[in-house]
Length: 287
Image (tube, rainbow, N blue to C red; front, side):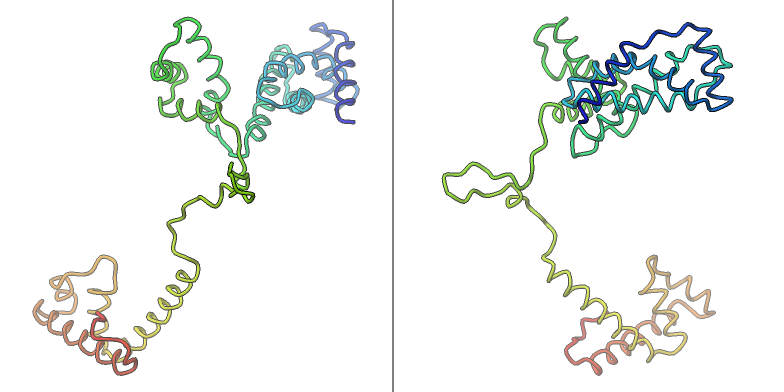
């Protein structure tokens, strides 16, 4: 059904008459000022040849021509919605960019399940690498890949590593992680079974999370045994990311840095005692 609709669209486009500049301008004005749907239809059907010609340029990316034509038609409609006839520019000139952009976005979305080419430089690399590489090999013979990568990188203003990475992507195809590997056994292993994960097992992560919450609760309970000055010094010295100096705390509290050190040492000892008393399984290693 979809293919037959595409063929009908192509046949209709080939039969549609070309538009003279004056007629095209009049139709564009009718569409812009009065939203005349008939004028829009005549403008777009007359330029479907442009869409078909553009689709043929992208046929080597493995996607169906009918899908490319439909995406190009979307770009053509977008161009019509944005076209300003007062600028005295032919509609085909303006629409070409929108048609190409619509097709390129469709190709990038569907060529691979791995999304790539999100920046303008990467898009240019994706759509021009094969052409430039073929041209360089034709003019320079079987040149080494490194030399070709360097010349392509200079032509498209990207790094040589980006060229090599894109070339590797274009040379391969998507492979499912559930695809079976060749094996002499009846039960072949899947690719996903050989992926290496450095993360701890889920049960270990859960245990660490629970233990961390429990230790934080124990620490907060032990801190309640300290007086105000001890708690301030311990928080500023041991429980903050930067860690205040003895001199700065002494200046803030109006005492000497040696006195700050003594209070800190006493607070740590009180903290250890409180933790071990309430939770005997904890050793004096805390703090």
